[in-house]
Structure formats: C-alpha cells, structure tokens
Amino acid sequence: MLHVHWTSPVTSGCQDADEAWAKAARFEDVLTGVRSRGADVIWTVHNSIAHEADHMDVELAVAKTLARHATRIIRINPATIEETAAYYTLPPEKVVDLPHSSYLGVYPDGGDDVASRERIGVPQGVPTVGFIGQIRAYKGLDVLCRAVEIAARTVPDLTFVVAGKVVPAEDHQTVEAMLSASNIVKRLEFVETADFSDWMRASDVVALPYRRILNSGSLLAAGTFGRTALIPEGTPIARQFAEQPWVVTYPPEPDEPAALAAAIVEALEGREERRRAAHLYTRAYTPYDMSRDYLRLLESLADAAELAA
Image (cartoon, rainbow, N blue to C red; front, top):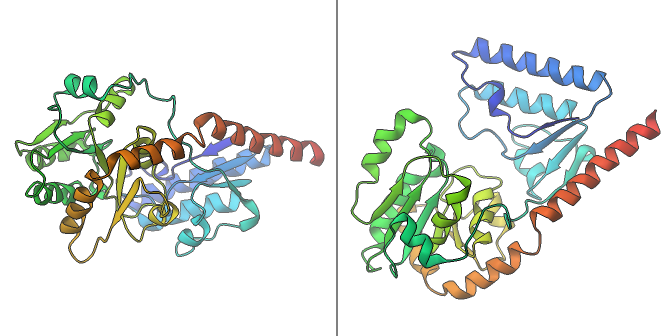
C-alpha cells in the first residue's frame, strides 16, 4: 500500500517547468506500477492545491493523476469534494471520511502555564498572542504583526509569542526585521517536540491568519492545549468549526489587520469558557480514535483484495 499525503514534494526544487513535468510523469509511473502489482494507493487531501506551488499547472496535473489512480481518497474536511471541484474532480465513490484528531498525548506536556512561560522568557501575567509553527508566506505573519500592533493600543502589555522555522531560509532576515518590536518573544527555528507545549502554553490565544486553507493541524493543536484559535471567515475550516466557541473568526476584508486585532481583543476575553470548550472538543476524538478508524479503512481494503482474489 502506498499512502500519499502532500503533492508538493513531487515537483519541489524543480528549476523549470520541463523538470516539473518530467517528475510528474515519473510520479504517475510509480502510481501505475503500484496499482499494476495489486497494491492500493491512498491519498489524503490536505489542501485543495499546494500552498506555494511554483508550477501550478503541474501541481494540478499531479492532483488529477492521484484522483485517477487512488483506490481510496481520504476526506478530512467534509467540504473537500466541493472545495476541490474548481481545480479537479474527486470521484465520490473513492472518497472516505477520516476526521483530523486532536493532538492529545502527542506532545510532552507538564501542564504548567507558569513554568512554560518561565522556560521561554514570556513575562508572567501578560496577555499573549501566539504564532507557532513553520513561518511561510501564506500564513499571514505580516498581517498578524500589524494586528498585534493595533490590538496593543487597547490591551496593556500585550505580548506576541512567535516560534517556528522560516521557510524558505532566504526570508529569515525579512522575518527578523518584521519581528523587531519590544513586545515580541521569538525563536525563529524548528520547534522541537519536547518544547512545543511550552510555546502553546505561553500563548493565551493562537492566531492562524492562513490564506487558502482547507484543513489545519495547528488549529487542533491549539485546541488540545485549551487555546482559543483565530481564523479568517469564509474558509472551509472556518465553516467546519463555526459552532465551536473556542474558534473565533474575523472578516479578512476590507481591513484584515483591524479585523484580526478586534478578534484578538475578543478572544482574550472569556478565555476560561473557551478553554473548557476546547478541552471537551479535543478529547472527544483523539489520535487513538483516528488510528482505529484508519486501521478499519486498511482492513476494508484488505478484505476487498481477498474477495477479488
């Protein structure tokens, strides 16, 4: 069995379109070879299209190739078929649901907000906004910086907590300059698994001003630690979590920084109620639950293969 998650690695690092098309062709050869040997291909659709594709036409061709050759297509967001329809068609008979679980038990966690702040240098008692994870252009850090600056005018001692590796590395200097304000605590490097909980616990709310987003592990990670998550309205993930009180949305138009700033102020109020709601939600479907559902999918494919033999 071959399980494909992200499509972007197929053409990552290609110097030109010809090289990208050649790699896409080789990828299809691999899929054809796997299927010709009687093995299954599973594709989990994480994004409608890759966030940062250099060769969009090739990227779409790779997605269409996967849709054609996959035995099963895993849908995390219930709206996946509709959201991808503008780019490619997912055969409904191949699509199976496997919701994204929380991260309960994945990250080592001492459960102590005070100790976490002390370890990474965040002042005790100040309100904080966190941005944790890889720093990429599509994630809207520039918008969030302006939003924090606006929100700080009405929230005394508001502190911005940022941790993650800058990708690509050439953007490091630009990001450093962007995060030069005195109310920012940052670590611009990969966040080790052992340290992840400290950065989450040091954040009262977690901002995810991502553009073009279908699913978000970061949102569920925030919820696992009882943090309020901020996301733009009008995205599939916002619609999916519309009924969750620990997820606060804001309008990205006409003035996204101002709207996000207002959402930050709102999210900092009533944190305890939202924390309880997040804990309840993220403990209802755990990584163990997801693993059992995935196992049932694999067993169904094995049963189908036996019947066909």
